[in-house]
Length: 341
Image 1 (cartoon, rainbow, N blue to C red):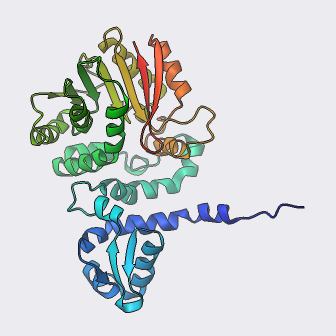
Image 2: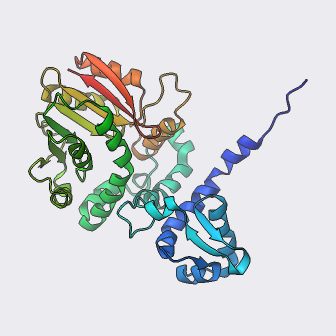
Image 3: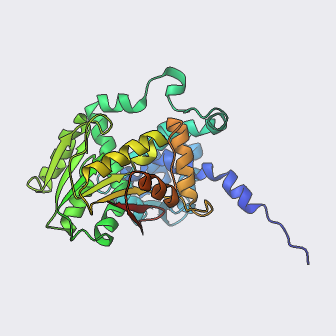
């Protein structure tokens, strides 16, 4: 019997950006914060957000169908409320807010992905530098308020990975951990809570230091976490028993990846561990779609930057004389790639 072919998967993927844009626009409008703890009708919510009535029912009900809002009742009397997930992660009043990343996806990256074809043909980045030569990250790091908001949002996205690493990796034989590109020292704070014998160095650019110190002080961990400022290409890494990079290696081309790996090797003692937290692509390059899409995002953002497989990591680290390797699954598509000196 001839198999009946079905185009639904093609169509679902082809139109997936519709649902993505609905969610990203809801974050842009701060819809989830507006709802907060108070359910609203479509009319009330539309007025609160300053929306024209034509699109409100379609917009809010699309969010219901996509499982980003719940609704009690139907039609004009129906009242919309956050789901447990959107209440926790997309309401700005919550400490677990991660909306900064969707905000960046909406304001910057969504448009840049419209130029994927050009990126594939040229190998060149397709972000703001394409038109005006100005790097968005340079502008961000020059504005202390924006930088603080960005670091808060990015930290929230890594919390699950850092928690799983703290629980799954055996830190008992080590004493000093250095987080390269430590941002708000979240990895150090989380790992420190699970491993009271450890002390930490959080290494990042000078502009990041006051933001990191604020969070370290608030956590009462100033006696265990030291902020060190520097440029990880210009300065040597602080010596440590474990060196960790969370989503750092994928930002660079192979030459720079190898520089960072060699610096990690040089800063470690015999038996020390280098850990890279990334969305590692499976060796056969068939399964981890998110890792592959992230690598395309690195093309769009930086041109020659890319994500990689466990096999790649092992090969590069072997070239720097690391002797043994281990891989630990973390949250979702992420993994910890570990090289031992």
